Length: 458
Image (cartoon, rainbow, N blue to C red; front, side):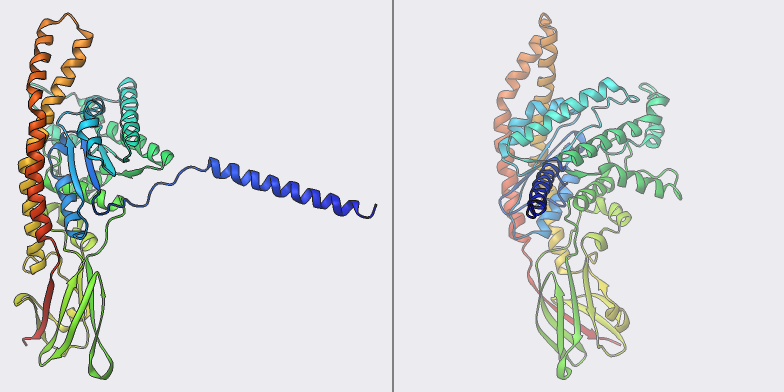
């Protein structure tokens, strides 16, 4: 009788433990997946940009490529632009096998929605079609072994549209006042889907809107999207930055600190590379520096966007600090080139070189950007224009299913099919030409050892 309380307590303990474990397992099974903090592209991986005309522009995609070419020169990452002007999610589905999955991508970014809303105030039936087709796109990407990255539609600039109003095709006041909100709604639905499914998400919408609103406080006519739909190069850079930031890739390039050391010597603290051969001179210091990467340098047409974003400091900082210098003015010389003059106080507080076009590393990164621009304006454009032809044929084929007796449409579909016989040749030629330029990029994007001299001039 005396043992019964002990047995009862023991049984209760095991029962409670079993219930707790079962409850914990049930909670774990019900726990929603976490959104990835970043994407992880390694050597040999492929990133596909799937989208509409905003992707077909080959600008935000180009600037993201520039970032990877300079920030990760030790990884040969392949990029494929799969944007076609006018595309909706349904259109993307028609070419997703050959134009996306055949490239065996690790990640596929999806920028669709601008055309899917059909430039009208919110319509639940139109939105339901977008939901259905976008869900199918995401499912196909996952089934093909790739990881989707959802991206909100970009901004529709109603003020820019009003200023460019075409009298022959006027946009309704309702559309002008509401379409940006429609796109915001589409983007928030995508974000909810990303949260629910543990998918990476890029907010392309908010930063464009926020920067525009802020700029219009002093310049009411300011816009990053002159035609209301397609961001100009500065706006496309804002999009590229949103991708780099939201996908967990933003970081500084390097930071060098030269400090007094033991017995009147010098020591270095550095991130992003290696300092060697450091020594004092009669009028300053000198050392060698081998960085792991290059600054994110962009074509001139994108520079206003970089200024708006303070891009260099945020995403490409090259810091330099030199302590223990005598009072005076100093020149900073890299590989024999004077890149600037600074006081000893400024050098001790730190200077930033990422936007200094005189530095050899800036010039090296600019050469990368120039080559990549050639790639995008040449073979990549040729490839995307070829796929635009496919999209027209696919849409006509869909119409023919609904109008099987339309002989004129049937003839157009047949002729389109004949023209598509040359698409594979276009693809092969464009890919070969793009690879040749990419080979040149990877030949010149490797960081070099640079010799720094900080010498007193006054």
